[in-house]
Image: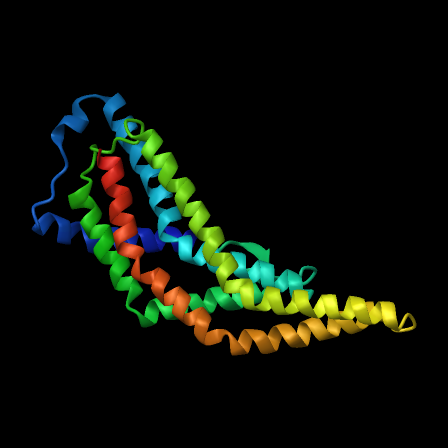
Length: 231
């Protein structure tokens, strides 16, 4: 819910601000020279937060993309559950993999990485020093690259299930030609569901390894993005 996100942001602010102040991080007084500078700074910080949020969520976006692909191939496209995080309906497989990725992040102390990166961002990119438009071409290229990484990781995570189900559908299509009396539609739906669950279980170690490798690049990618904005 939105109110929980707001309260969490305020609590995080009260935690991070004293730490930054004790480390000598200060706001440049030139920002307050005019209302225009204050407005531009606030707008830049909001835009910066949105873009960093996208970069920080790229692994989860890839996991959900894989879940959507797997769920659709298994026949779950018409079934959905409510996701309180995004406040929308999602395919159950996508939600299950999203929760698994969240547990992996917590197991790897990823929440500590988030806090460390947040604190480091105020040192790498102090308030009022964001130059989004000065390096717009590099920023856009980086965001396009991250979008490609989301699709690439999503395809790699879903590849085992997609390939096996594709081969299964090819086999059933050949069988349907040989035995025309067979109700292939009903059989393939049940078979795809069973095959998908088995392959998901078998490929779980590979899923965990790929997600772990992606999480290792979390902090370097965010810092790299912030350096682009610093110019």
